[in-house]
Length: 199
Image 1: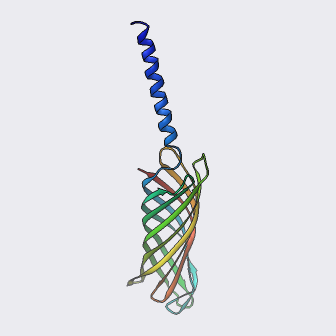
Image 2: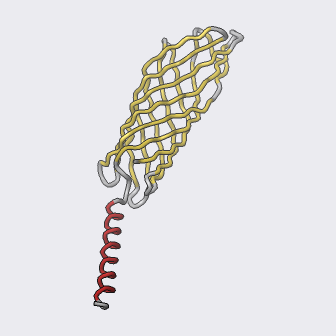
């Protein structure tokens, strides 16, 4: 009996180690499932003209986005995510030529995005792209006058990142968006960094 117990203990230990190794191997690569993400953007705005006035200067602002999405595996290397996203694009101060005044523009939007990703085999590194459609809102104010309006727009971009085994994803990339509101074209672009967590 004294000889059996050590052998039994060793057998159980080996069985648990093998099972843990199998589970670890089965869970290699990117996770499938829901994720929550936060992005911080450098938001650059470009406008040809505003209310008939040429533009003298536009301030650059920081923007922040929050996304909830689901990522599905298409193959060993390819993943596809679909996400809903809210972005506050910042308050931009627009100087109008010969108008001697500035207009403050607050932009925000809701997007539905698709994000394909290619993961390099055996690593957490990936390259990805994104494209989406959404509704954009703007609050414009000058002195005591304020106006709110909205329109539909499109966005696209590219990113690179790394997914840790814990489900934490660090990313960085470039995005561009275009929207027409009240016959005015607003173009946004800039770099961003992001942090996602897969449940």
